[in-house]
Image (cartoon, rainbow, N blue to C red; front, side, top):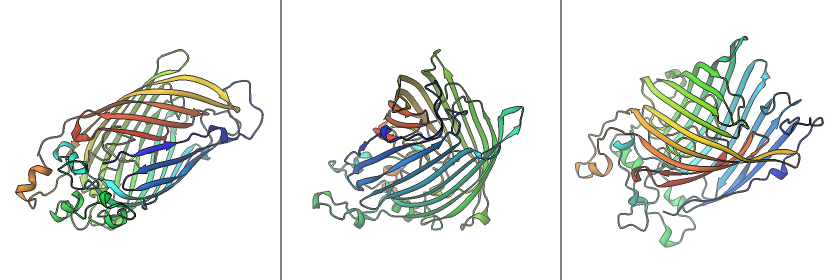
Length: 445
């Protein structure tokens, strides 16, 4: 299968500032700024991608800099074959007094969403089936299905006691509308040469539906909303890239049956802990780690919501894993899917060069990382209809073990908050994939 080719341009020279005169400090920003990032990419099956994004910031009088008063993120991109992403994300500690308000509206149509089965190592990944140069080749989209997702997310966070600002309550509502189906082979085959055509065969998703592993109620998607509430402990000095402090969140996510068009409900507990250590007086070398834990308390989670990782913030269009740009870099997207999971990311971050360009604060940095994921609570399903002569090609009934990846990245930051990130990760086990290059915005955590 052809590798994805991605090219992005960081246009810091298009940033504009309005407001009162700056102070003498190079690290105080006032008024309004924005950053633009057009993106062009190519995928052998999805075609050319075109679009871009912008992030607008309002710093007011600059008294909170490098933190902002308001942030508005807008993104639109489209592949020529039809995959489309449109997103609006708003974050502000000032909209409602003493309450941080976050809102997200996203529509994401993915013509080839990754799907490898359930419970990590229990699901066998045959990479040669995707390799059109292999004698075992089946299809470049064998481990894919169609998914359209519309999401509305709101989150509110406020201090519990004025004299203890680190402690906060959290509450929010998330709504999803999913449309799931088989990969539209005819659509992806348009304008392809004969030697590039995808064969009209069933993929893994189709087989799981035929075998009853994915039940008929879930097979085509559904509409769901869940409520979340919890506690946060936050002592970070800078929101976008902390140099010290701790950020811990513990909350319950509950989807009642009356907020779903399916018959079931579920409850999950979520814990995310992040800590940052300044290693030098100039605050240019930082060690950081993140631990994430999810566990189902009761009910049944629809298979397409299993990868979803509930959070109070969204640093990308999706909050799913484990595997891919925002969880396990270098491991295939959604490779680890289960009722419960453990995630660990360890990073060393170095801001190696800082300057002032076009009246804007700018720095270049690099990061070195190790990622680990593990399914801690298996998703239970019925395999009785799987043909015995095919069973070993898809399942090995092995309990999951830790999945590791490692790599390095580059960062280019404008006014501390607009951070262009390029990470390259390598999987340590071929059952998890080979490697991945991810060009996105923001630090991972």
